[in-house]
Image (cartoon, rainbow, N blue to C red):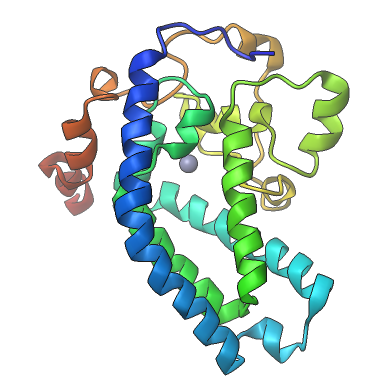
Length: 246
Ligand SMILES: [Zn+2]
C-alpha cells in the first residue's frame, strides 16, 4: 500500500543506507552502547533519578519511563532543528530525497554520539530501570522504521492511530522541503506531544499523494544526497562553520 509513487530507482538509496547502517551498527553502536548500558545499570544500582525517588516499579515504572523518555526525545529532536550546531549533524538524516523504511537508518555517526550524551543525561534525571530503557530503545527503533516507511494506512485506521502514535502520514510533513511543514511534527513514539506543545502541522492528504520529486528532503545540495564523502564531511564544512559564526 505505497503512500507515494517511487519517482526514481531505489537501488542507489538502499545501497547507501545499507552502508550507513553497517557502519553505524558495527562502529558506533558497539563503542557507544556498551559503555551506555554500563551507565544505565550503574545509575539503577545507585538509585539515582526521579523514578527511583518516587519508588516506581513494575508496569507503572515501565509505562511512565517510556512516556517520559519519549517526551525528552521530543525536545531533543526539536533542539536538533533549532540549534545550528546540532542541525549540522541532523540534516544528514533530512537530506534523503525520498522516504521509506531505510530513511530510519540514515543518521550521521556524529548525531548518534551527541544523542547518546543527551540520553545519558536523561537516564541520570529520570532513572529508568535497565529493562525500561531497553524496551524504550527497542520501541524507538521500531517506531522510527514504521513512521519513515512508505505505507499508507486506510483512513479508518490512520485517524485513531495518529492521535496516539506517529504514523507515516504524520511524519511525512517533517521531511517536506518547505520549512512550514518541516519545522513541525517532531514526535517519535507518541504523536500527542506535537499537539500539546503547538508543533503539529497537517499535510494536505490529496496533495501528499501527488508530491513532486523535489518535495522531500532539503532544498540545497540535492545532487550530493547519496555521495558518501560529502555526506560524512558536510557537518564539518567551512560553509556550516561560517553560518554559525554569523
Ligand atoms: Zn528531524
